[in-house]
Image (cartoon, rainbow, N blue to C red; front, side, top):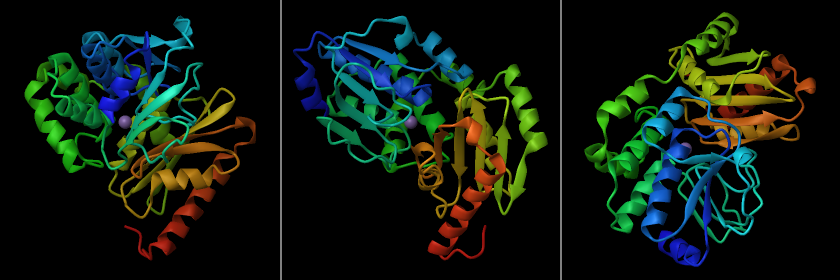
Length: 326
Ligand SMILES: [Mn+2]
């Protein structure tokens, strides 16, 4: 796929590499790696994104590795440039539709092949999109610079929660190769410092307001909470021995963001969120972590939503005949 894509893009004066909105380290790393490959092959790529960069991990990574990311608010996009989407898919709620034509999708989420896109490389069984990009370097026999390796290493580590979530044999293979090339002093510093002082008030609020019922933890943030922090808080509560599934919701502007974490195979977070948001919003992701939005925050009733999720989980228990919750 990557050979054909590069061949296809050869005559274009430029190409946009678009991450999903509110990018995470895996998205930024994938875009950075692909940008390097494209440049080596004589293309003129630019990394663009919508939303904002939210976490300290990401901000430090972008700064220290000099990843040239452009917010679409700060630039005039050339609509004649083709678009390659990484770590997300055309049509996803969290991938803003930009003016140009989407020609390729490179993703590891549970998505269906978008028919309107010429090239797609979707490897849903991979822990990170960074793994796919590392594989491209292999296939094209291209040397990987230290900065790119360090970025991909961080992307892989963050998306797999330090190799504890959704790890495929190919992820481990990529991990080994990236490990040898990575600047570990920098990577470890970035990986360790993944929250900041101002986040603690959200931890406090969540600890004070968390409800735990039948191995499911739930919290609603009426004051709002950024999406990336919700994911980090989800992992935090998933660490509780009594909890196998976490549901966090936050009112952000006129919408409600939803973030899910699951550590049991019966409860596929991506499937659960799609069911729960049918008719009221959109969602998707992975079996282990997923997210979505409820379109109308004024209509949102946290308790009812929690109950609806509980019912879906009970249905899934029946479907999988797992009468006893773990
Ligand atoms: Mn990812």
